[in-house]
Every structure is written in C-alpha cells, then in structure tokens.
Length: 341
Image (cartoon, helix red, strand yellow):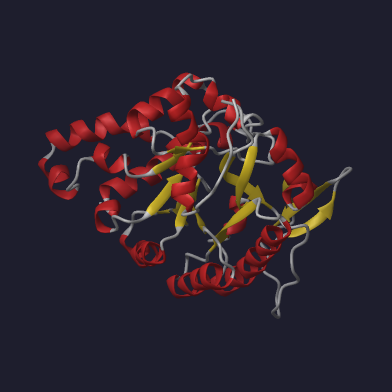
C-alpha cells in the first residue's frame, strides 16, 4: 500500500504572533513572541523562552508541502498544549484561546481542504468552556477540540468535567487528549526533554485510565475521544486494572464495565515509534481504534507516519484502517481518497 491518503490527528499550531492583552494589567504568563534564528521564533512565557518554533507552526503552504512527503491528505491541527492555558485566570485564558482558535480557522480556510482543526477551551471555568465550545463548533466549524491530560492537576474523568463531555457527545464532535504538565517530573533524572519522552506517556495513560474508572464511556456511549502517544501507559495498565477489579469488591462495584471493553471504545494515535509496540496496541485496543498521529512540526515527530504503520506488516485491510479509515470515523468526515499500489 502506497498512498498520499493518510489522515493525521496529532499536529500542532503556534500562531505567528500573540495578541496584545485587552485589560489594564498584562498577566505574567501571557505569551509573546521574540525573534530567533532564520525562520524560527521564541515563544516567551513568564519572561522565559518556553520553546523555539519554526514558521511551519503557522505557515500553511510549508505545512502542506511537508504533508506530501509524509503521505498525508488531511491533518487535524491543534494548539501547542502549553497554550491551553488552564492555569491562567479564566477570562484571560478565554481571551487568548479565542484568538488562537480564530488563527486556526484562518489556517483551515487557507488550506484548500487539507486541514481541519481542534479548538481549545478554558476548561478551568465550565461556563466559559461551554461558550467557547459553541463558538468553535457552531461558528468556526471545527471538527472537535483538544483538551489536556489533566486540568490543573484534576483528571479528565473527574465529575466536574461531565458537562463538557455531555456537550461534546451532543454535538457529535471529536475530543483529542494531549499530555500536559505531567505528574512525576520530580522522579526523572536527566534533561528536561525527558518530559516528552517519559512523563507525557505516563500522564496520558493516567488520563485514559480515569475515563475507564469513572465509567465515562458508559455514561456517554456516543462520545468520540482519542488519546495521544498511543494512549501512553494504558495498554500496560489494563491487565492490572482487570485483575484488581476481580480481586477488590470496591473496584468491581465502582467500575461497572470491564476496563478492557471500555478501552476498546476509545481511540489512540499510533505515535509510538516502534512496530512491535504498535502491533501490541492493535491487539489490545483493536484495529478499528488506532489513528495516525505525527506531533508535527516539532522535533520529536514522526516524519514517515504511513511507513511506520506499514512496518508493522498488518496487511492491506488493517493498514487502510490505521492510515485513514479510523480517522475518518473519529473526525466524523466523509472523505474520498484514492489508494494506489
């Protein structure tokens, strides 16, 4: 199977510039841009360089040019997770996220159908979050929203986020969960980049587990929710959770449906950088639940996502599911794509 038909649900955006703050006193964590080398810029947060990014974060033509080499026909863009801004005062975050959402809408409009978008919501305030959800879905026409693996330390399966998931199910949108401010950084020894390599998958796994132990999918059975980085550690945690549910009556009473059965109703990106690991995820979650994710355009991204799936040697039927068909279902899109041998 060789095609230019892949669909990527995990790719990020940073706007070329950030807006001036509309208020009397600029919050210290309000982001800004500073010049860097060549076509790069520094994202400044709280007076420090958070990340140096290239113009591929906002330049639609360069992004689409790279998509051709990655064999992608469609890419769902979402904000760099740090921009979700849950730690800001709610009204400040709402102001910033409205700007970022509108910047993504402009990128989608310029893409000629090659991009769709996941909006960002100020989930630290449910009323503001639901209002922005209405805006990005009903006004901007986004395919869904991106949320963090935790909201200021609270797991996404916590009861206070139920109104959001209820609204997401009602609107029939996709929800993409990305790692953010992970737990356990104090247990890692080494450079800061270990956050992406080791702590992100741990936090995503805990986020997904919180959805299982809170019976989220049983409560909202039509919800379409996907987890970044292959669901992180979830696949390794599932057997322990199943055994614990058999051993501990309180857990059996609390988790009303088999965790594995629930997990096979969630979606996961295939960004695991290893064919045997990908095969294990397909065996654990089902071939219908894995989708391309690249983490484009950051340094730690998969530059050959279709080839990464083909390397697992699933066969054409499963390859087509992972490369495009599952993403089509997750995004709620009716895509026509041609595949060539």
